[in-house]
Length: 271
Image (cartoon, rainbow, N blue to C red; front, side, top):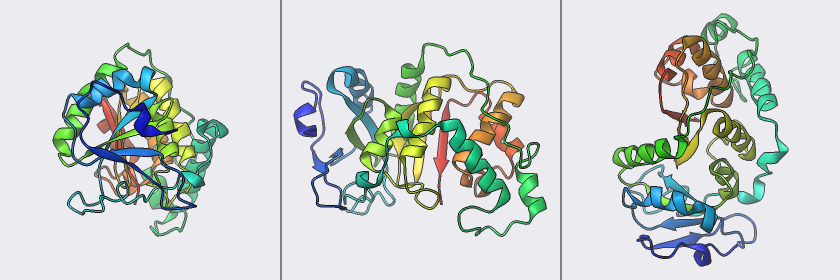
């Protein structure tokens, strides 16, 4: 698809260009990237245009916003050639397998050197037993409104973020279609993470708003309001992104779960 031909007319897009993947023979151009930050009102307008344009808007942060390379986006450090389809993967099976891997070892390379007791303490009360997915809450019809609110907050927190446009049917799929490789140290097929985010879109009214070099930022319309539900959601987060707990501000699953109660945005970071 020629992204430039799909850009919506009548909206004040900042100057930008189509980005070519730096892998393969150079014919994949999965992303249009602005040269400067967008206005706070542009993301909601583009999100509303998605049904007609087919372009999903992303707010993209860089490893170093002051670097002219604006990695990974402006320099084409994206790898759509490597990715499978999100439809090829079952989200609960992925989460269960990842949970088993990370509760039995310290990750792909076992770099954290945790003892067995320390590892079990982090994932208490579940230990090594995968608790299954959290119950699906009753969704309220405000997922898009919550995403718009979070997009404004994200731009306030990341004033150097740029606008990305991706030809994707939904936000989760944009991760694999762009070839984002943020979780590369855990799995180099981003479509698996897209499958999990798809599931969160359906169950919690999640919307993909921002993506950084190795970070992911979702708005959430239906967060947990009870600790028992938040604990199981925290287990899903740990299975998807163990560094949120291993290297985050919350030293174990229970503390992280308390943080999730009534929280309308979920942020992930992979080392």
